[in-house]
Length: 442
Image (tube, rainbow, N blue to C red; front, side, top):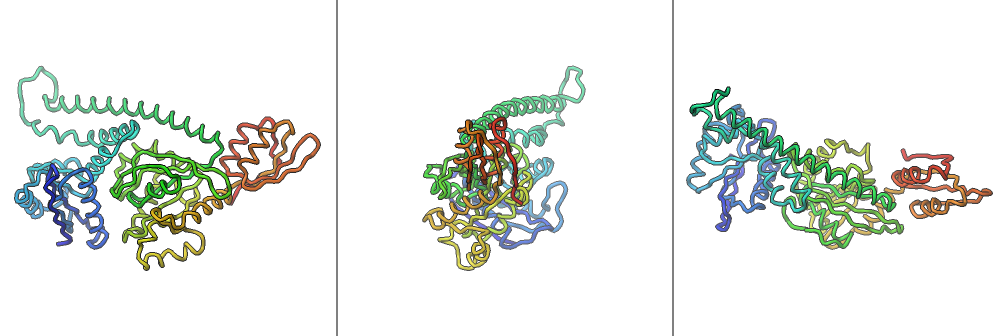
């Protein structure tokens, strides 16, 4: 019958049953067991009391309820026996399936998207985070309006309007939600403009940006805190970080970067959340370098990495469009087998092994960031007027390597800069400097 988990906690306010349906394109095993544990962690993270959880194979999904009548009967009996008031299906349910299951089970039903939205709602702290979660929740709720109106069959005297009172109420609710969505989108646009302004200010500070990405709870915030000395919330729970945080870090070369800690990804991340958090994820899109953090101590780290790559691809990011360094975290507690698995990539310099807790590998990571930014730079030859001292100072401040020689009233500079730094130079000093030659990295 698959894996079962039973938990007993008396302090939680709501008793919950979790069911992980295994559809025909999946198979039972460690992957689905890990997914079920992840769903339990999500539920417990918002104070729900998971009193029973199971995974179950679904040979032929039912259009109306996804699962068969036999399983529905078992779940209903279990809910009565264990006094559960909520049943969570760790799968995507259509609005009709969710409504039909609620009727059949006579309990509240939540699917995976709804559960993740609840978690995000509990974690959001900043105005931007709250707005983004609200937008995702409203988009999700709009598709499920019919759930709230099971009384549509009741007829009462109307005022001559078409469709009956229930139908009119749905339209009113839909219009109200649409108005809320438009209002939140407008507010998020203001946030996006502010974030763009902050990004432009950072660009004027001549610092490259490096973004941490990875599956939720792989230790990104712990690594961020170690490298920056910041006090960002770092907890052993899913989605401890929702709002991006940025701090300066000085590399071994002496150059300064802006390191960004971002929201963690998760398998089957709801489309509504990807869209709602697009403003936040723009920090990843605009980064000069991405550090993909893996939890080497998690048996599922390979599968998790693929989920992260899928979300990045959805954002238009892959190794062909942006430099990405794999950072294998928790090397201090990982087993030898997993370390051996990634050792070839580490030996070849394609990946870095670190411990965000002990600091092991941190210096190697910072040096690798230095090298990656330099390798990704553009080689240029620039003729600058001797009077343009600020332009020359900029090149000396930002270049990975630089040499210059006087040519009468001009200075000929040969330098290697990050592409973003070169773009800023051209934008600010195009009237006083002439780029005689330029070569971008392959």
